[in-house]
Each structure stands twice: as structure tokens, then as C-alpha cells.
Length: 232
Image (spheres, rainbow, N blue to C red):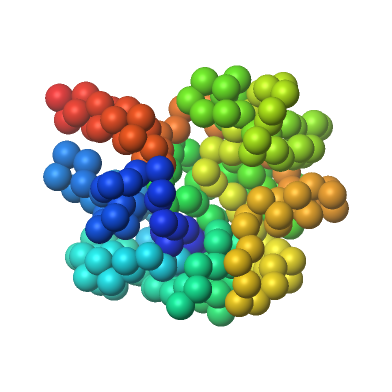
């Protein structure tokens, strides 16, 4: 299995820390967050990683190199001179991606059986799968509805507060999803997901354990507390 990690964002919510440090390199108990991600992927048996990088990417590459020291293989895809957004970054990496691949956000720490998720995806016969969690606006604003095992709505604003699930930070795409993304343009994953919903081509898998994220100072503090407790 292969995982593409979206690690090129500007991390505006983490300023001033992100002024000189890419989000993936934010230190949690003395270790970059991305290293924690790589460790949970390696425990899951996933060692083929594509890092979609942009902002301050040289700091990520200098630390992780080709991944050999961490027991994985890392290939890099670069946004270039223009910020491409989450889907645009995946499109740039298209030549590096396999027929089926996971996508995870560069600020998410997850608890998943990736083999089980992949098996459910293959059974679904859909172009894509999104892992969701019944969040009820607890850890962040819920943004997903599911119906009969399919994603039926995706709304990151959720002004009515009526959604129960949240995007868990993990997707599986078949390579044909790349056809929905224009090349060399700023393009968000949200638009791809909405297109897949309209085509009824994105199934759902419900995670049972909460996730952690470092996209905000609050999330970063919660993850730090988790690591401190885990390390005892």
C-alpha cells in the first residue's frame, strides 16, 4: 500500500511557529510531528510514502531524506513556485502514484487498521473512500453526512450544525480520481470530494477512535498531552 501525505500547507493557524517551520516539522516532545506519522504508518505495514511538499520543503527533506533511516521509502513531489492546494498537490504527484493509494493530511495522527480500510474500499467498487468519525462537533466542526454507506454531503462550513461525522483525515483514491483535477492550478480536495459525491463514487468507512491533529494550537496541545501520557 502507498500513502500520499499532504505536507505543503502554509499552516496560518499555527503562526508565529509556522513562520519559520513547516507544520510537519513542528516539534512535539522533541520530535517532528511527521516522524510520529511515519511511525504509525510503518506499524501499519506501510513504507511507500509520497510527500507532497511546498512551503519550506527543504527543511522536511533535509531531516527525512529518502526515509531510509526511518525504515520507509520517501519520494517527494513539489508544488513549485505556486501554492497548488491539496488536490493540486496530488495532481502534481500523479506520476508517482500507484493505481490505488491512501491520502492523509500532514497534520493528522490516526488510529486505523489500514488493511481493513483498504479491503472495504475494494468491496465498495467506488472510485474513492473517505474515513469518517462520529464527531458531533466535539473535536472540530463536523463536516460529513453518510447514507447507506456512502458520503452524501461534505460541508466544511456546516453553518447549520446538523452534520454528525467529520473527515478523519484519510482517503483512498483510485488513480482515475486524478482526472477530476486540472493540472498546475490551485485546487482544493473539497471540490474533488463534492464531485465524487455527485457521481456517487465515494464510500464511507467509520473509524471508532478519536483522531489528533496539529492544525491549531489547541490541537497541538492535545496531541502533546497524548504523547506525554503515552510515554508515561
